[in-house]
Length: 150
Image 1: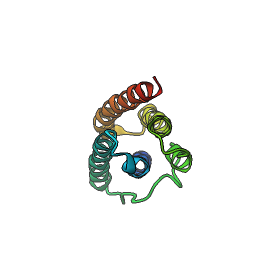
Image 2: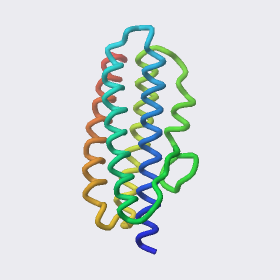
Image 3: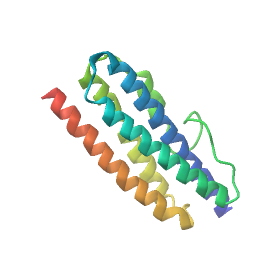
Image 4: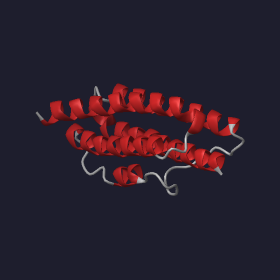
C-alpha cells in the first residue's frame, strides 16, 4: 500500500511538471511576437520540468509502477496549472508573468503537499531537491513580474 501511495504521489508530480512544460510553452507562444527576453527564461523552466519528469518517471519505474504521461486532469495533489493555462488573458509580459507566477504557486503547493504526505519513502530526497529548484524558479518569475509591473 505504501508503495502504491508513493507511486501515486510521484505521478501527481509528473503531471504538475507536464503542466509546467505546457504552461511555459504557452507563455513563450504568447510573447513570441515581441522577441521577448523572457522566452529564454521560459525555455529554461520548461527544460527544468522536463528533467524533473524524467527523474520522477525513473522513480516510478524503479518502484514497479507505470509513469503517468498526462497533465493534471486527475490526481489528488494539484490541478492549478490547467486553470492557469486557461487564464492567459493578455499577451503583455506582465500579465503572462502573473499567470506563470500563479502556476508556480500551484507547483509549490503540489511539491509541499507531496513532501508533507509522508508517502514518498526513499524518493523524498529527489522530490525535495526538485522542490528547492522549483522555489528558485518561483522566485525568479516573481522578481520578473515585479520588474514588468514596476
